Structures are given as structure tokens and as C-alpha cells.
Length: 299
Ligand code: NDP
Image 1: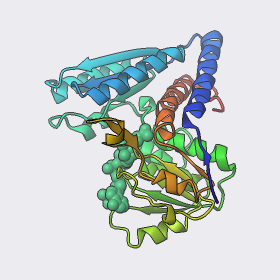
Image 2: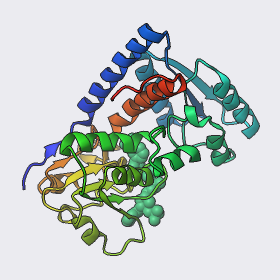
Image 3: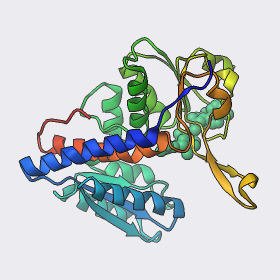
């Protein structure tokens, strides 16, 4: 197989954002609800600042209210918990996101556990993890794997009976991705750093999700001919061809080789990345509907 179809995450995300914006407008007209998303950012990490700026802009573009809380990295655990308790009680706030990673002195587990599960639009609270694992449709689902699933269903239609390999077992990508695929009746394998004969394990998969954080680790000959490959990895590598000191982003999959074997593949950048914020907006809309006993739009 040559020249896999490129799954255009940028275009898909734009479509999803437009659908969210339409539903937000409908919610406003019919019920006078304007969904609100609060984002908490601690410290000066430049990458996190860019993410938070993009989230704020896209939230406003979708017609929602955006509340940004930029805090000094001197903040204490108690001060942060007080802020979160306040956001939990604030009726204007339907979704709360605490930008990770947090400074070392902050107790991440305690902070995530303090967020009201109904407002946990990142889907990291143990209540939402449990709901996803038990197939409860009111679960807030982590945004990156949700975006991957949407693109897979758009590409393949019904996923029933497909063999899926999730490479990576983190709480934010690998594990929820595996749960989502199981929910779609795939036969799911989760691989990680201790997996034996990884290339052989990968070669069995109709669907291969790479979420490892290692540039170009998945080679072309690890891929089953005709498989669909979703590359979650975001890795910055040196790019001397672009000039001295320049860098570029690449995924976990050797894209050029893989696209000769796969039937469809997500690029990096422009694949999974743009879907993550679009799914965050979708989750904020869904959270608003659930909190107000309204029907959840089919998006
Ligand atoms: P983590 O570092 O939390 O997890 C990486 C996983 O990969 C672990 O389960 C680890 O195994 C496994 N792994 C590492 N090395 C190997 C190896 N040599 N062979 C097999 N498995 C290996 O990463 P995340 O899940 O947070 O992120 C993964 C990638 O996705 C990163 O590049 C990240 O930047 C990107 N990402 C992209 C997002 C987006 O919006 N597109 C959002 C979130 C993440 P073990 O558990 O055994 O250590």
C-alpha cells in the first residue's frame, strides 16, 4: 500500500469547533446559558502560556466565557485549593482546567481531586476515570484520546472487532484511549516500555495509537499493511536543515515510512494536536448541558 490518506486533524478540529459554536449559540437563545471555562495556570512555563492563550482565544471564539487565573509559582497548596473550591461553587463556571505540569511543591493528586467531577472537563478526576471504565455516559472523557477516537470513527466508521494497539499507558492518553476503544468493541492491547517483541505486537493491529513521547520510534515495518495509525506524540528535535539552532516537531511514528504501509495516518503537527482543544470546548458544552439537565448535543 502506498500513500496513506492523511487524516487532517486541523480541518476536523475546525469542523468540531464550528459545531460547538452553533450549539453554544442555540443554548444561549433557548436557555440563556453561556458555558464558562476557567483555566488555572501556575508559573511562567512558556509552552503552558501558549496553550492557555490558545485555549482562552478558542473558548471566546466558540461564544463561551473564558476565565483565566494566572498565578505565581509561589502559590501554596491551600491557596490553590481555596481558588478551586471557589470555582466549584461559581455558577458561571461550567468547566475547570488546571494546566499541567504543576510546580513540584504542589500536590497534583490533591488538586485534581478537589475539582468538582461535574466540572472536570479534562476528565482526570478518579470519578470520571471510573465512569469511563464502567461505561457511564456521563463521564467527562480526557480530550486527547477523545479527539483520536473521533478521527478514527470518521475514518473507519464502525470499529467493532478491530484489533487495536495502544502504545503508552499514561493516565492522560494511553489508559483512557484503551477504554474508549474497548467501548467501541475493539480487541485492545496496551503496550509500554516493558512489552516484549513490540514490533511484532504492533504488526497485529488494525488500529495503532502511538503515545510514547519518542521521536520516530514506530517504524514502517512495525505497521500492518492497511492499518490506521494515530500519532499522539509531540517531540521537538533539532532541524539543522532549517538553519542553525532551529527545531521542528515530529511524532512517535516514522511518518514517511509508515505512510507507505498504512491506509490512513495522522501527521505531526496537524493531526491529534488541534483536536485536543476542540474536544475541551466540546466537553465544556457537554458539562454545561449535564449541569443544567439539558439534552446533550450529538457532537
Ligand atoms: P508519558 O511519558 O506519561 O507516557 C509514555 C508512555 O510510553 C509510558 O506508558 C511508557 O511506558 C511508554 N514508553 C516510553 N518509552 C517506551 C518504549 N521505548 N517502548 C514502549 N513504550 C514506551 O507520556 P504521555 O502519555 O503524557 O504523552 C505521550 C506523547 O503524547 C508525548 O509525546 C506527549 O507530548 C504527547 N501528547 C500529545 C498531546 C496532544 O494534544 N497531541 C496531549 C498529551 C500528550 P511505561 O509506562 O512502561 O514507562
